[in-house]
Image (cartoon, rainbow, N blue to C red; front, side):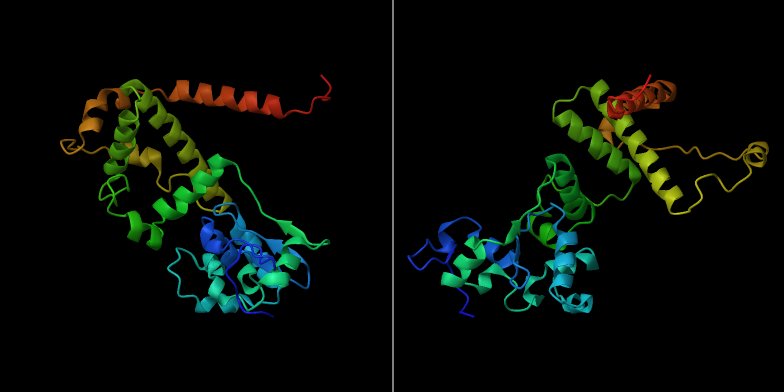
Length: 267
């Protein structure tokens, strides 16, 4: 095997250096090559490449324990498979140059692939790892920026930030409240469903009749002086639109079911 090179395709007739193309060196370092199986995979960030990298590492004969030695600051052990320094020589495109790289890139009989993803779900995945889970490298680079979310000390800070961001982006007060209601209803339903699937209790553990007789209550007085948007929208947010929200959600569900029905379904 030849020494690692710095060309895009490595042709003997002299291709442009990797540094001439944006991210070319990065792509060469992260592209996985399984020469015996004639497989080449180009990872696309937030495109489901973590699962594929684990699959390919297994096909290459790598043991999962290999990645326990990763020193990358990842938010989950499953992401250590992205530590390409632990992949053996010959399993990355950067390990090839000249005619060898040309063969890997052009020879017939190879499976060369990448995986794309819907932009919406890709953005959601990026938000989860980089913002919600606060990926260390991302925090180190952008954590001091004004747009980077703060760590909340109070649940009301989350609501305040959500509403103020919508208003700052052009939402009317009524539109921001409607978006908050829709999102919180969706999120609550999703969390309850996940809890039930995991076998957790989703009903109160207390006897509601006993709680009512004892005068128990969960209400509390909240000082909104530090939350100007919440204070301005307090009346709108306190209105009970649960029945209307349920009706809209049910209509959306029925419409989706109708769209998904087979065209040849008998009446």
